[in-house]
Length: 97
Image (cartoon, rainbow, N blue to C red; front, top):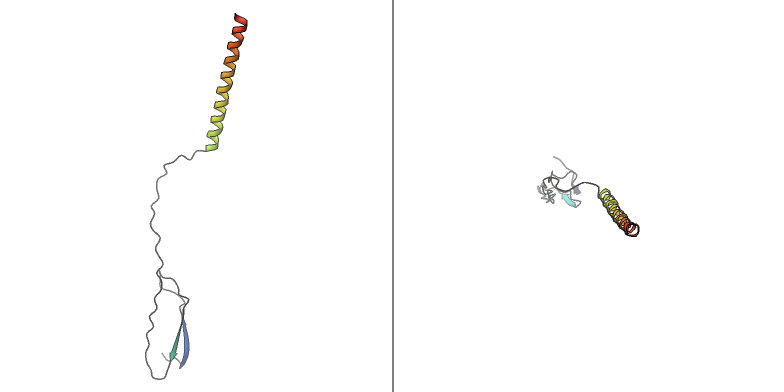
């Protein structure tokens, strides 16, 4: 390969698979003595994401608001039945005695 003499900048265009691209710029000189220069560049390895197996569903997916409304309605019904029972007993005491 015949490269004209001069100053050059080397930039990484496409990193090896699994490695991050470096933005570093490397300056080199091509001179007439024909010396071959090897440039070793270390890229940072992209860390692998840990394998997380899918877990089985173990919880209840029911609507909690629905259960709260049902509990509230049940509590109101019990209170109403209790009041109605007391009123009936009071009526029986006053009319039955």
